Length: 283
Image (cartoon, rainbow, N blue to C red; front, side):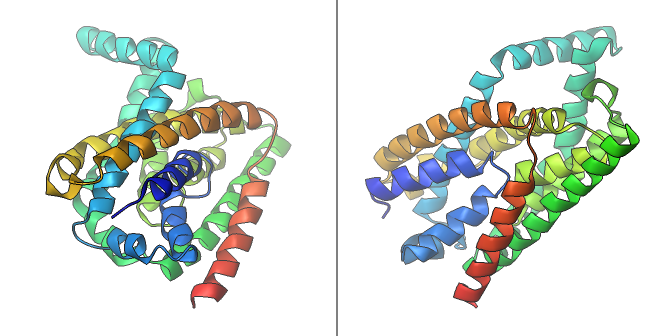
């Protein structure tokens, strides 16, 4: 059974780490293990559990927070998508962005639908999460390396100029976020930086791309929350989701400003240090 205190802590953790490039899934495995919440750690790698039903609410709350923050952008994107379908032609940057997001969403959506359950049960364990968190730090450093090279060559690519092939590459990179310890925002931002996007454009595309995936994951698992696994924890789900939604909103608000001028390096160092310490602790 999840307590209300645990629900608040995990909700705040989810809301922050889903958007900060440090892996929400990895932290949701590591922190409970460190705090001795062994019932939660065991539940994460189980086939069915009330904890997994609880996570559904957190995902939906995080996606709603992103939708609220980007509400004007999403209104334009959805309008542009339907207009381009109606005329069977893509015109303007907004319609192009809409289809870039569609292309980039497909790989993670398909792989997640087929393999998410198996990957979670196999890798949602503290030592595995610590190893992948360390790898996540190296991935972020790689993104910064390519970004510096692009700046040196003055070879930046704006989001308006992003092509569908590159969007597909970013979408494929997002698949790695199914592994506990690999950050969804981190891996997609890195893929964008490698292809020449600025940090600001890479961050915005990453957060927009995360929204449908997170929301779809929550809706897909909604029967778990409404079924027997949700019995006795729906109050905790409500409290945890409120915490997650607020944390996610203020996180994306902070990060969109942060990446206008700052780098992924502090997050990379954090992942390397925290991941290394956790490997030693859980080995």
